[in-house]
Image 1 (tube, rainbow, N blue to C red):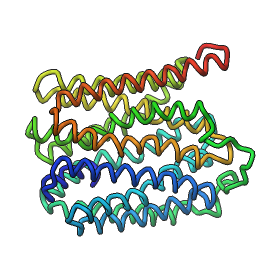
Image 2: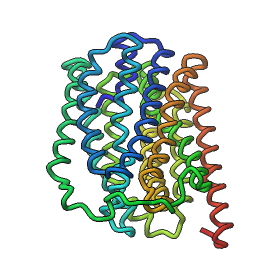
Image 3: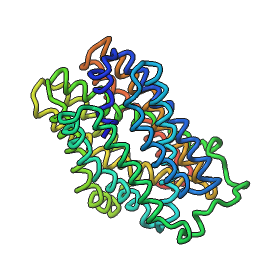
Length: 372
């Protein structure tokens, strides 16, 4: 609930300038990068289970304490620290998916985890907007913090480590190829970074666009974001089933998904009517439904056994780099050039991301000698 409203909280409750908000969101991204790297390392050493419940419990406490920070240096450090702890969870949960699901079900297993996330996200922003209206931003931080703590307690209770499969226990992997030396994997990460760069605008600059240009209230913004989560919850699993039955390659489908997200920014520039916000959000949602689970599955497929934590850490770091550069760059662009030019630039970056995945596909076809 906090993340979609963070830029609004910093702007309206703490009265920070767009430039300062941009730097705080960069600290958000930097913390996410460090947390992802640390989470991958710890997952390979102590296992996904311990990393996941520790991350949830500590990040819950962090969100509760964040509301007490008011100065710019304190907030920027607090956001950084929370994201270090919170994003240790991401590589760990990907490795847990690999351990607990069969290979043929992996893509849908990722979608099922995302479905659980999006079920919360469909209600979270709407409830968050209501909490801000009724209790102010303080209530938002308290509720979000407690839900993280409850999630950690449930994980401790439900996911008994004594019942976990043998393959989740860390093993020696001296012969496995390091992700830092896997050129094809690093190549894919560039495309993931650019995709994350533009996608994350929907959680920083786009809410400000809704507020400043279309004069939407926090409650209306929450409902618009909740529509994204609800559509994901209802349609993502059937969509993944449909795509699995088609002959199109994973990379082709990822290209389609990124194209839809890039096109959603074009929609935002076509006039000034409320319907374009709904159409843009729906296009972004469809692109997200395609790109996220398939890119996750592709990364897991490319990961060397015994190094899954490190591979998935790099995957999440590539996305976190979007946090580091995307939010700040978007804020600075909006401040200097306005929303319209910013949306055209995001569209262009989406096209560049597509080109990287097209080059990756061509590389794979050359190596395999067949068309995928």
